[in-house]
Amino acid sequence: MALASTVGLSGVAAAKSKNSNGFDPDKQSEVNEFVRELHEAKKPKKRFKKLSEDQKQAVIDVLTDITWKYESNISMKSQSSAQSGWKHKPTVKTTAYGDTAASTREYSFTQELTWEYNGDTYRNVEQDYDYSLGGVFADWDGIKKKTTDESSDRFFTAEIQGKFSLDVGVDIKNVVATIESRGNASGVHTVLEKDAPA
Image 1: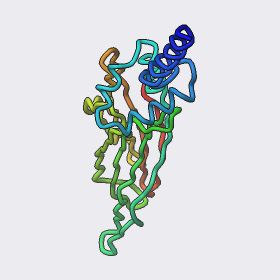
Image 2: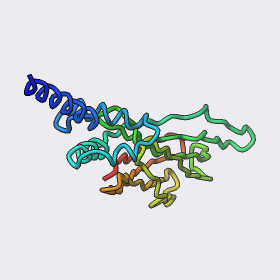
Image 3: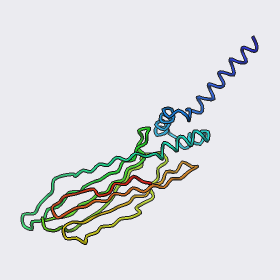
Image 4: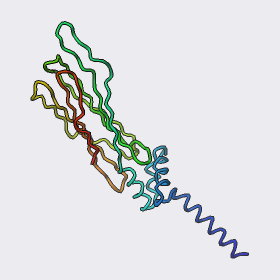
């Protein structure tokens, strides 16, 4: 009877140990679930530090395997001036959204572009940016590159790169999001390059 009790207590201890670890690092569904829980945790970094090395690596693998989605939108219709013939292009926002297999959004980077045009040429090109950190370990490191090429009278190209880092304490992964767009004398906007950070 004593032996049976010892075995029973051992089984309970093992179960509690597994629960305290949170998930099985070899089961992707459990890893994804933990990553989602981490996003909602009040002290995610403290919780992460308590994981085993295998669990930490499983979480890192999910957080660094980013799938990028891109979206461009214009806030309103172009506004024209009857006197000058110039039209003002409302801000065109092109955003790169970085998501994980756990359906968490780590960060996003937006190019904001506007200019004036009259059908023959363009002027007053303005390029700005915005960003958002959704991940608990995501950091913003600033703009790496911001250029505008206006060598052509018919069109211009605007490129911007945002630099991020993913710092989980045991590993830091630097990532760069690149968005390159073209605007022309007719007010048409085209995204030329949409790079996932590497």
